[in-house]
Image (tube, rainbow, N blue to C red; front, side, top):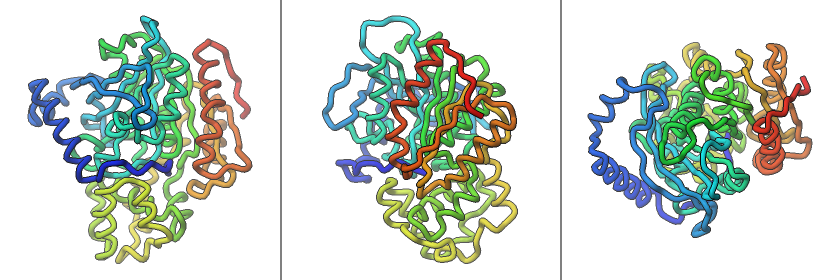
Length: 394
């Protein structure tokens, strides 16, 4: 459930220290303390901006872009419905245009569990891998807001692969971008976009839109390589190339639902892996976990337990029809997310009356699917922003 990330030019320890220093400076400059921010969360509304500071957006190291960018923290909601604070980045082209413009709330694929892996940490250095895809959007004159998700760049562990928390973070990022006065996006129409973990997040945002953020003028959602069924995806990856992602997802579920007590199921090797994953980013994590089996790292398989199965199924997609059109695609050769999971999501949404434009990619594995569809998916969103209708191909 990831896109491969570049190795950051700084070590995780140095990046973590730098991120913490920047956060401390930002907090001091805004007159906020950890206690103040926590107290303010419950008092505010989802999507309210807690802090904002100028940053920069570079697709490659040192590559200039004609954009302005702000690192923000904003209020959102956990999977359990309690308030939290999430970080992200708002990016606006400097093209002389004033007033509302299309706004994409963009959900990245798996980056890792450590704070230095957050997209906002890499944008100033040109090391966030999907920045190249995001630049294709800003080149169209569109603004983009990129959530870091819950627990990346903010206190607490990353709730990796927890669908409802991700969906909230994606929708609230759009709210926050529109409420950021410097960005000038107050009445901007919104598109939702993401692949892999980002496909899960964007799909959840699409399903939640009508109940959670109906005031957002969402025109459509793009979602690719979607892990719509986590149990099936875990079974698919057990002992295969994506085995490390199972442990990462287990850590993410445990972060959202600590009553699952992941620690009770891990053996010594499993505990070492979890500790390691929490300190590194996705490329290293996936390499470390290659071909591991769940039985290698546990004393008892948690995925066979009722409480774990209920938690994982609570992230399943296809239970509610998105109220706006969806462009859904999946590579037939995907080695990480079963193709049948993608076709199953299409069938579920179509059966519930959603407008779905489905595209199968016959020769694409996981990463190739993201690259191959970047431009066609953006073209589809451009039609939605232009007011053109679509009937889908259910």
